[in-house]
Length: 240
Image 1 (tube, rainbow, N blue to C red):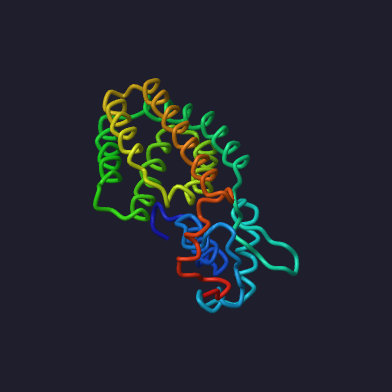
Image 2 (image 1 turned 90 degrees about the vertical axis):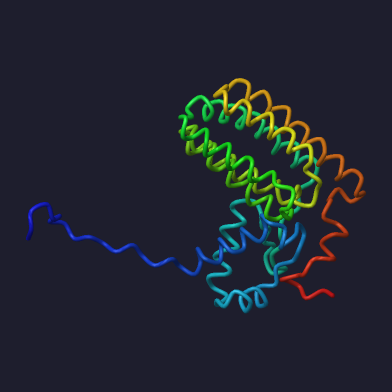
């Protein structure tokens, strides 16, 4: 045995399980609006499309039920959860508390190198030539990396879950006002002004909340996806 070699056996990491892969695929589809709120999830069709058996699919759906994005109703099957106005209000109430604090921690901890990287990500997510879906992915990457600098992993994890749950509704909306808020936020990030960034984030979240609640009210059904989901390519119940 050469010097420096561990005397303890080195274990290989287990291969990525089918359950984890299916969970990630379905979670992403829900986040991106491919599977719309209220959409029935036909397990046989999903298993066939994903190339897995029903067992890892059922386990994945149970995981997603714990995250609040899937509802399982005994023998009736599973659906992507819908969020009503009260749900939206509660989610934003939590985000206003957590994100304003997290962004202040993050910006106050930024190094010069961090600032350059974070500002670059922010500019990238505001490109006008991106689709709504690409914009969503870019925004998530920006906030995930920014909040990582807060050094609050539990807070960050909770925030990202809340964002994922509600951003699937925002993906259909016009986010022009978001670009204006992002520009202001870039200025505060460049100045490493955590308190200023928190104030901008608060105003941005309040405006986003009010826009979403307004769109729900205008839809009549309380769900801005109604009408749109019928035009989407369905993965689940085979409806025309």
